[in-house]
Image 1 (tube, rainbow, N blue to C red):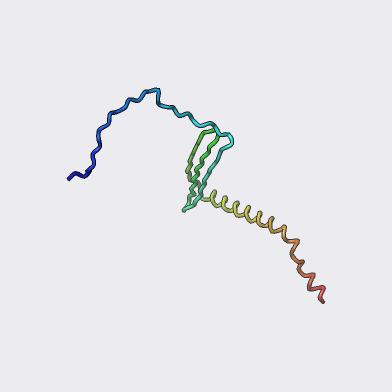
Image 2: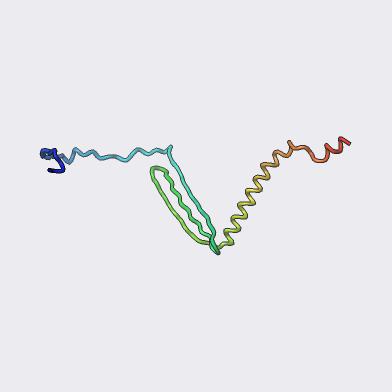
Amino acid sequence: MSKHPAKREQRALRKVENDAVEVVSPPARMPWFSFRYSYTEVSAVGRTARLKSKHARYEDGKLSTGAFEGEFDRSVYDRMVNDAQRSSLDQTALFLRAFTSFLPVPGKQGRDRE
């Protein structure tokens, strides 16, 4: 018994004219649409620090991508981390200073009661 019990009849091939093929034109440019994506990773192990960076950009109908990897001295990494932490603490302190006017002044309440 055959694996394929139904048999198909052979059909004659049809001829296709070369002019019948429609060429697809590129899509119209969309000047209102563009995007950018970037990714950066910094890690430190031992005496060296590693930097990995990737980016992609779509502008004016063109997509461009790039990647970068490099190594640098650990002291540069430590300085960068310290600067980032200091900047974050400074911004937090500036934000919290706006709320100090709502806090009671220490010492005045105790003196009024005596």
